[in-house]
Length: 193
Picture 1: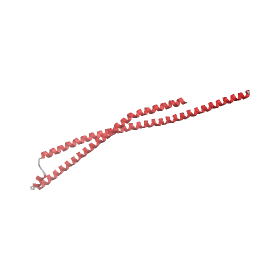
Picture 2 (picture 1 turned 90 degrees about the vertical axis):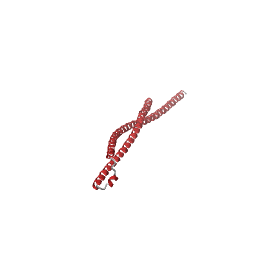
Picture 3 (picture 1 turned 45 degrees about the horizontal axis):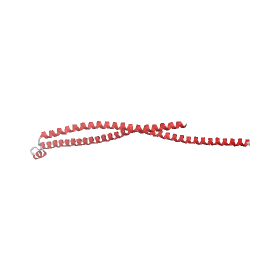
Picture 4 (picture 1 turned 60 degrees about the vertical axis):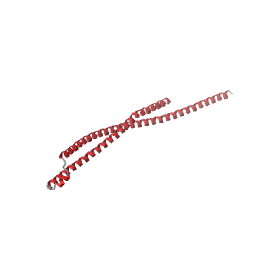
């Protein structure tokens, strides 16, 4: 009886130890699962942080490119404005010269048959002046078109730059949020070990 009682007590203790071992194995498995989940989450957060840093660098580079483009467009606009002013002055001088020359029109020259060689020379001269004015007016129109195109590009670049600057202001906040999440996960992982 005493041996049977000792055997029974030993079996109970053995069962208790087996249960404690099973419970600890389960705890270890749970901790391992939690640790692996936290490790995966931390890795995902690290990748997300790296992606945000990459986006921030890309945005910064785009901002610099837009600023360079805007500076070039500003220079181009300044040059076109100078060219436009020069062309306006030239056209004004041509119109002033035509006005001061008087009412010498083609019909008077054509009806003047007495001096045919002089008429021919005058017609050639007036044709040359007319062609020169047409070229100047065409060049002036092209300058205006170029100027409008540059102004439109400037507005587009400025708008894109503003969007990039707004995006850049938001990116550090998102980056801090991801870094904070990663720090929390690292802290939880440390507590598990």
